[in-house]
Image 1: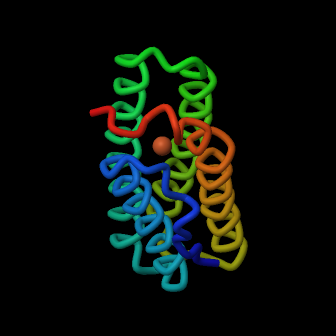
Image 2 (image 1 turned 30 degrees about the vertical axis):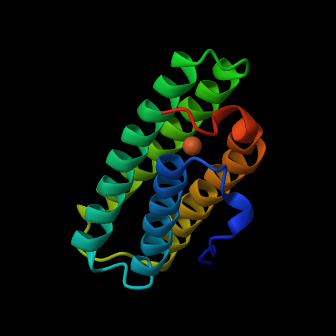
Length: 141
Ligand SMILES: [Fe+2]
């Protein structure tokens, strides 16, 4: 299921908000790519892109929070670490599947579970952690 951007997800920092929107777009595009699981190149391309974008975003956000000594900095970066672990699992699964000649129904279901758990994990982090920095981060670049 694709997730629509909601303006309540905005934390009021243009770079961070733009990156969050970008991550949501790429997660949604992975969900769409899963409808054609035998188009393995698209799947692999999307998941690799998500990984690069997520790493860049986490680095940027953590550097910014460190620069201004955000009080919940550690909690935020622990959340990022968990998301990176989930991302690695999804990437490994997709790479393993890509080596197979055809993706069967079980593979497809497992892939969907990985991607929807990634999407949920990311959304939960955004709502529970990132939104807490709303007042703190405004105007800080
Ligand atoms: Fe974030």
